[in-house]
Image (tube, rainbow, N blue to C red; front, side, top):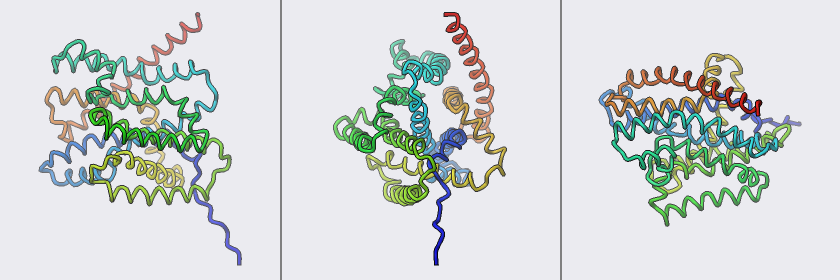
Length: 348
């Protein structure tokens, strides 16, 4: 009696189909995390919200950032596989990341450093250039600083990802760099831990992008093995190291993010288009994920500076409402600047 081979309902290329939705889910999870983390840490009297916050903090946490880093590596492999001119490649990233930050960061750091913190002009320059993140743990907009570095080194990571042995060596070296900083440069490690721990997942995202791009029909059997391993490994690491200060705890946590990506894709394929409204919202959030991140950081911290109790659900909800016109204005300004830049280029 013959049995039909089981075909696992997932292929690596499926990630690219829902990448926009995944970006949207990642940025929204980060916004929710910042609230639930705050409510969880103050152990507020509202027991219902505290229980929800505790669950979210422990079950989801900041894994949205790991997902974002992984998906960035995944997408950049596709971009670099088209063999673009490096000048065009970098210019596109400058337009997408650096210019939005420079516009908003100028107002953000001016208000923070001169109005509320009374800092020196040199300290302002270090903050605005984001160098302060690398030398003094100034974590506002740390993600912009980190993703910019990843964009710069992405052609090299692409070279690593194209060969199995080079990729393995790169992952080992990235974990080695974390350990090296921890044991021999603890001050540096404590400043940039939030970024350094996530470096391996950019490499892994690149490698998965290569597998997705070059495997024409997917590899259901290989995928099922990978998924089982990631599930078991992520649960094991979360149980063993989830509540410890183990040096690689933050890095291992990224495996949990990869598992959540798999889980989302499987559920998404199962429900198809039955929840169109939700998926459209996630796609829209994914399209403007960077602008949402900038607006969230700006508005949330400004509320803290003026003394608003953002742990209050209504106050935090109002910050989300304010973010919407903030993002809309930022997008429009960027469109105007982009059109002016294109017109100037065409004249030249």
